[in-house]
Length: 581
Image (cartoon, rainbow, N blue to C red; front, side):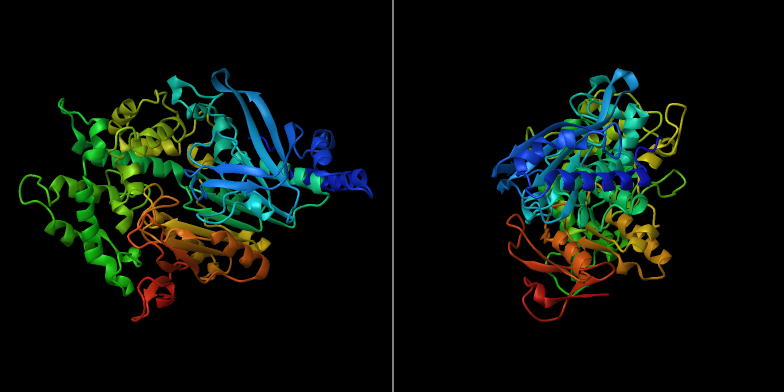
């Protein structure tokens, strides 16, 4: 894979741009509009990567902007954007596999009132969208652009409209192009960061004083790429629910399908996608949740509907409660069938080879298992029009097109994807995660994973990494994240918490939601750690209106500590809990 950005070139370009910008502005600094309109000319010949150019640079007056409530970690609803210069850029334009036109496209917003900070906004899912460059920072906190940061987002080297091919996985068709797959996984990240920082230096006449990366899910994986492969880029990284083992997690989704789909047989005896969401009723999952709480709720010292000590909540511990709620005969209301219990156990024990070797990770039994955010991925939502289970619709097409070599051309038809997942040999498919070929000299695991425990570069730089993760995340198992942290801590002689901390969120689903105190401001905690040296020993979190206890507060504790009840005090107040082992 070609190296598109080299350290020496980047340093020379930045130095040249600072001198050029300072000279151009002189004693009378041009207004934002003038500087914005001049950017294309200013940057010509001064990009760290020569293939880069500006598509548009537009001065934007302050005005309202509506954030999508579906974006992980985003504050939905209208916000008032500040006056800024909005830039769209492109690099690495080329023609790839199947005649597809590929490029890396990026989006930058440069606020007039700049706080001297730089913010890289992580992506999500299969990316393919240049992003809004607003910089979501958390569930209830203001986006980075409103805090004065210059913000960049990017499409990671493919476009969902331009590169969509119905015969090759729809929007996942980029997986048939080796460079596009590499760009999606890791190769697009540093070139975009370098280009955006050069743009910032040219526009403001100064390099950023502090740089931050924030992302969840695929964005969390991107944060891990920076932490492990390019630690020089950021002072602080917030990598939430990181998909740093994406190929293995996608195989785990197929494992789940093979566990649950036999419960969804249609009149022809074959699994029917339409029946998958109703394999467990709301009452059935409530029974499972009751068994979990009965076994594990009190392990943190408080019976409060939150499994704070979720790491102790194992299959062996929950099984007596499940057996007590299992029907003696045929399935009936008020009890679970043996097949339902077996499918859940198979799913949460995680994918394994025929010889019993773990392929990905197991999952904790946690109270978020009965939440809509868990059901949407594992089973699908039963309401008409809500779409099929995401483990099929997204997990199936991603595994076929992106995470296996060679990729498998399939139509993005959920029923066809279900049949394909049901027919997979798990052992053989696991081999394809790390396979290479003449067309794909690097494996999917090499391109789209970032699970190394070696953070020596990040430590040497003095940068900080925070990793919030929901204990009931149905996509990426928190147990895998905790295993990774233990590996990091082992390499660091038990002192990894000096620069990296994982913050489990009991009950929370993927990036948000669930019966949890899932509203918290981790970004501000990261900034204080980076800029003031205040290591986050706890993060105050609150429960939203969609939980059983709106307004409840809890401390989020850095693993391996748990929020434990002091033995007295209001169960709905964080003051009644300590972070303790």
